[in-house]
Image (tube, rainbow, N blue to C red; front, top):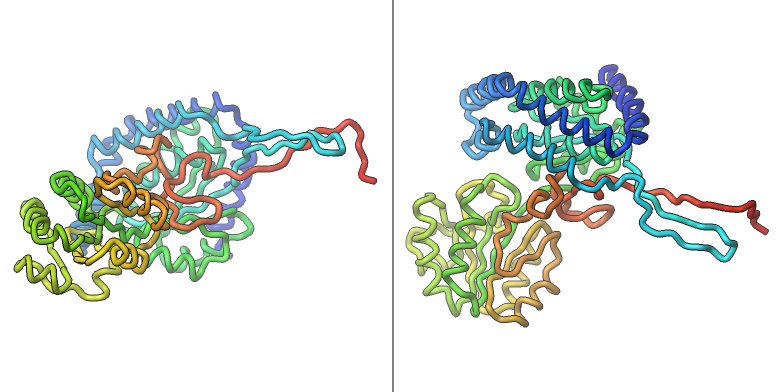
Length: 416
């Protein structure tokens, strides 16, 4: 085992044992101290981020990835605000969800407890360093973070600030740790740190997530891959549909809750396709369509099978024209990654059918998929969007970073 990882694991276990006994008041004070530290270290963070961006541009990193990497005062404020918001949220730790009396007179309760030590592997978004730290800390978990090499200097600067805030509030700085070596070899060993990690959460593109799923021996919570669909039903209000599409595709195409495939009922295709194409034109969205789409939109290029399965994370949109609701459902079920799926329709029963027919972490009627976000859901942030069904699903907030134990009160009972 790598000595650095072992040292970090030992320190994280000790910090987790201390943190789980901290009061809500103490944790909230720690969160507010980290909020203040982010502002105090803002210049250093922005300088480090500028160095990362310069290196990324020199290495030809795609524009959407550079957008994910970029920090500015407003984004630092957003990171800092999340600490304040999470401090105001109820603390799940210690909450007894239920208490029942057994036939033997035992009082049996189910109490929320931290997971322990969480490992997180993520790519080019340095705000994850702050978001994950805030949520793990409030939910009583120590965390070891491994960010991507393209954001290393930014992540180190953010972690320096957070650890400074932690120590000012009387907590061990090892409660939050960042692996300083982003090499693949060390990442592979990190995925097998069973003696110290209670779970591992990958947050990034399909390649990263599949690598973790295939190679980790630590229990993994799968997050993030978002081949999200927007279905325009024959009974859709087309002006609303256009507004939702522009937001869901263009507001921030690099994130996992943006729309990648548009599915349109043929009854409205002739009318709707030219309208939405015009609305997307200012954003220079590349349209990749099936034969029907290409016959209506000359600017569209023929779509491949891979296009309908892709998470583009860019200004690219796959378009499919279908002849019935059932065909739309079949297409979505075939290609969906189980993240977020949307229908636009004014028909009540069709909307209800969509809710029942689509198996995804978030299913929307007449609203943008961009709302699939812990902040928008009232969680104060998120550790990621879980696309699996065991333990947690959808935006992972404080409760999703906990487990439970049974607490039993007796009066001398013995089992016969």
